[in-house]
Length: 182
Image (cartoon, rainbow, N blue to C red; front, side, top):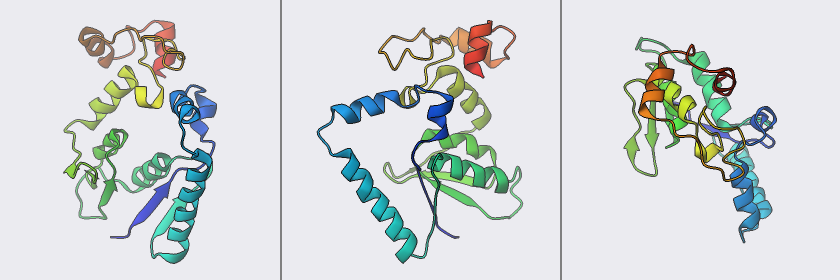
C-alpha cells in the first residue's frame, strides 16, 4: 500500500476547545534545558524534506494534529466488514488509535515496542477512556475539575463501580459530570 506520513500542525484546535489540553507538556518544555524552538525547526525541515525528496505523501495542516488527519482518513475509508477493500495500518503505539479499530480494515502496530496493538472492544475502550480521562493529554476524568491536572490537584477517583455505572449511560450523571463527559 501507499505510505502516508501525517504530522502535527501548530496551534491545534484542541487548545481552543479545551485550554488545559497538554498544559503540563508546555510546563515541562519551559523547564527543560533543550532548545525546543530549534528542535521544532529541525523536525519541520525533516518533514519538508520528506515531502519534497521522498515518494511519500506527507499530510500536515495548521490547527490539526496527526491524530485528526489519520482519524478523518479512516472514518471516511474504514469499513465495518472485511470486504476485501483497502487495508490501513496505523504505525503508532498511541492508544488513542484503538478507537479506529472498530473498522474491520484497520490494524495498529507499535514500532517502538515491536508489537501489535489490538483491542477486542474498541467502542468500550473509547468510552472508558472518556470516563477515565487522559493524564498524558491533560484531560482529567469526568468527576474532576477541568483544570485539576494543570494545577497539580488530585483527581476524584473513578472507581470500578462508577465506571460500570457511567458505562451504562448518562442518566446517573449530574449536570457538571455530564458537561465534562460531553
